[in-house]
Image (cartoon, rainbow, N blue to C red):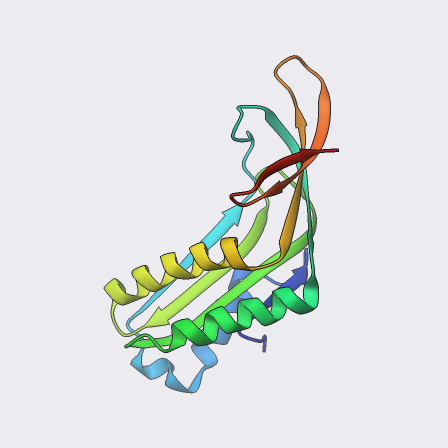
Length: 155
């Protein structure tokens, strides 16, 4: 079985793995809802440029620690039985999965709100880095690193 959270090389972990792990937890008999978020590679960036592919890297030790801390924090919410955040790294094409977030709990309302909090927190706290390879509106190909809320730097 998997751990509650972590960084995984592309192709080594799936959403099905996360669901299977959640269902194997000792407290699962108290679960009435499982909600998931699957982040995928979008085909256009925030400037409207065509995304060709993404490269994701992580400061793995710190990212694993951060993702696990977020899960532990959110497991303290009333009625929450399991929280998992699994971020993939490697090279990705448009439409491919990048991240799986799963929350299992007694009632859907708390599950949905905890899922949203988990997504917002991993995006702002985990040291995971994204390099976009795009085709600009004038046809030029370029690559740049994207940081959540911190803009970009061209490569």
